[in-house]
Amino acid sequence: MDANVQSFAVANLRRRPLVVETGGFVAGFDPGTTSPYINYATPLPGAEPTARDVAALVAAFRERGLTPRLEFAPDAAPAVEAALRTAGFATEEAHEYLVCTPATLTAPTGDVPRVEAPSCDADYVAVDAALAEAYGGAFDPSPEGAARLRRTDEGGGAVRFVRAPDGGCAGAAMCSAPAVGTAELAGVGTRPAFRGRGIAAAVTAALARETFARGAESVWLEYEGEGSRRIYARVGFRPRGTRLYMVLAQSADRGW
Image (cartoon, rainbow, N blue to C red; front, side, top):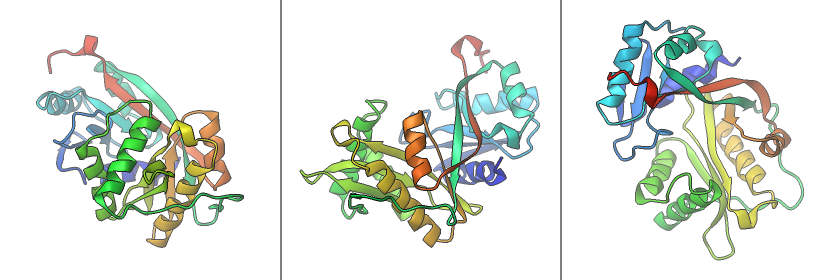
């Protein structure tokens, strides 16, 4: 288990526009969206929450009309999962995460697509739209989404994409600003019409290289499916641990 991954989760949530810290938890909220993938909480490493602590966390979400949800590395806070389950939380997903270091980073080979950084508002809009398409409509493209991508760039992170023949975006990814020596690479997506052309590997490697140049000692990401794992392995990402997503089921909501 890489302890830095959980420490990073805490530091990253503290960058949200609105932060609530209670009972060993840090919750990060963005008033510009109700997305549970942006509005969520994580425990401090080693946290041992009581029932009262969990209730206070749930209340922080309910006050804002949001579903209580957490993302964390369970090995870094072993007491948290049981406390959440007692309160009615259930597992939403569990993902293995992979870590890349400067020593393991490997440049893609073959006909590698040209990777660019967004240079104007139209580029951020195109990246947001491409990722929405790549993720099958899990979220809609929006001005707020494009603005969040720009904030990632302006806040010390990075967005990289491969341009489509029509001038838009074929595929892209982003990486957070480093904290505690590491950074999260996320949102890797390629529009269906452009898959199988090495775009995901190209943007992933470019972002890792850029993040190392900015002083990070590692970059980590989560993956879904054997196909994506192979892509990340080819550019130097190695298994390191598991991240757990937990959500309070509506049937377990006790009015907190």
